[in-house]
Image 1 (tube, one colour):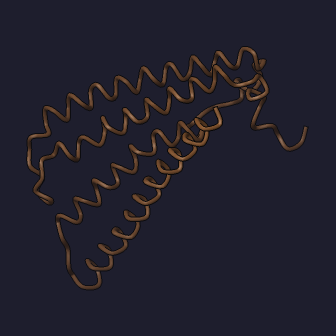
Image 2 (image 1 turned 60 degrees about the vertical axis):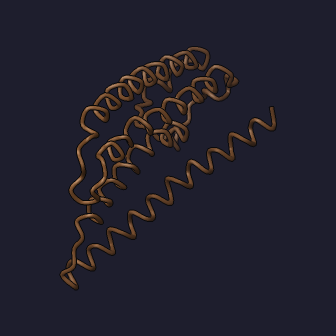
Length: 170
């Protein structure tokens, strides 16, 4: 069990590292293209298209990270008032709903990628399949993250479901 936890932590760090590296590269390239465009009147359509693709990648890559880190949008005003024993099953239900929605996203984004992916991009001159393929691949990774959170919710002790956002003054 300890070895599984270490492997899981190692994979999570790699996943987070890829996201951070992509975000850092995106920030650098956007700053670079702005400086080159406004200071030197230089612009490259392939680099601009790559920036858009990288932006899309970071957005969809972050779906799974948000699930793993519990950083997705949630309204806890009612959830925090539920007893921990019931809260576990509400959490399981929420994860199942997220998984269903994510699986639909993967299915339809895959269909879109296969239908529209044969076109050649104007900037990088590669099949659009590589750019549109970001959606189903990251969606599938997100589905795996949701399954991990689902298993954690089922196996977690009741103390894990105590209110997290307690007011500072009671």
